Image 1 (cartoon, helix red, strand yellow):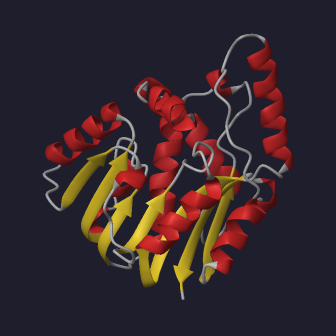
Image 2 (tube, helix red, strand yellow; image 1 turned 180 degrees about the vertical axis):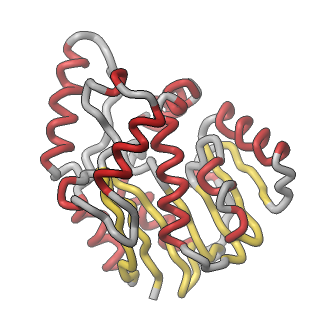
Length: 240
């Protein structure tokens, strides 16, 4: 099953940290999306190393971090201990194996997951049911219909033919995500679009330079420059 491939893939934490600039960027974009709003009960799934939500801990009374990867959860626990963050709990495993009640959370953060799940619609329905009315979901998707995504898939296809990068990502169009939330009774509040891939040129730039270039080209949530060129969408949906 795909989830077993995902677990194996993300136990290799060096893959995650290779894109450290993207973690930094997403941490800041989440902060821009939620602003000064304060949430009682938060869920971050998948949490990765925990940085994105834990660096925004001032916005949450209590937060639960969930991830498939034992190594990622270990890193998140280590960071929480280092920063003396006590209002956090952890779950390592499949989100569908949790016992979360419906409408249990005021905010759910879910970045970098839709490209990896077995069933995109099942996952979206699940997290939509877990947020309270008036609550929000911050979710990321790489729009498979965007020209830049098609270019990336072409590049990855060539690498796969060469025996590299055998892992395949899901193709999820923006319309699938947006229509799912609309049907579930959510309203789109904010969107930020950018590109997270430098398509073969990544090694030419440091993480700091990639961050600088991305910010310069795409701006921030309040002023999302060149948004039409961005294939990666970070959404904030509110449950009506």
